[in-house]
Length: 264
Image 1: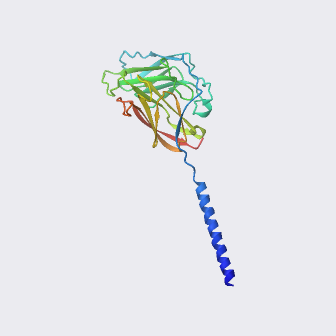
Image 2: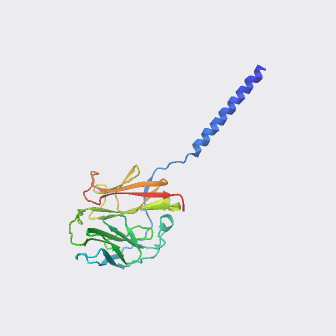
Image 3: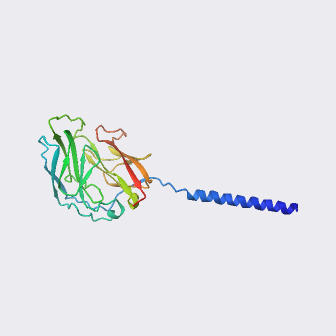
């Protein structure tokens, strides 16, 4: 009888141990694997080396009296509204409205314009406009003629309160921006525009801080961020010198928050 009881207790103990082991194994496998955030260069984009963007109106040399400003651009060798011919349209957030102009005032988040003429309400004061051609998946066209940078003054106050020097090394933030859903969350475009500087390992470079991970970018090319978690993500782009120190300028360090959502 004692032998039977001993055997029964041993069997129960082994059974409970096995159940506990299975429970722990189930719990461990149910936890999602956290992948490290990575940045890769974006490839396979058409270059559009001959594309040009010209500002016809307003005349930047004149003071504007009306806050409702009409903008008229001339676009050469580039088709607004066309879907960019690239495999990147399948892997990046892509605008169904096609190629467009990124309109950036005072380095604030851009507005996208799919026609060359439009109006904007601009408050009184001195403002700094950067506008450049964008592919349908929001990558900027990077050549000396694809961008305009100019000062705009509305009203009589000519104070440059922002303190921007258009001849100084300058970083202009473009992407990422806004909310990404479904399959668009897998690969996130990181893109920016540069003025009056080049990037290198020995000189100035861009530091990208994504959540708690930092990357040093030594080339002015488009990048792709992968493995961002669902929810809010914070991106900071900074233009720094060879010592890793921020280069003086009101636009040279920008922080933006984007949201990734599982829904379509």
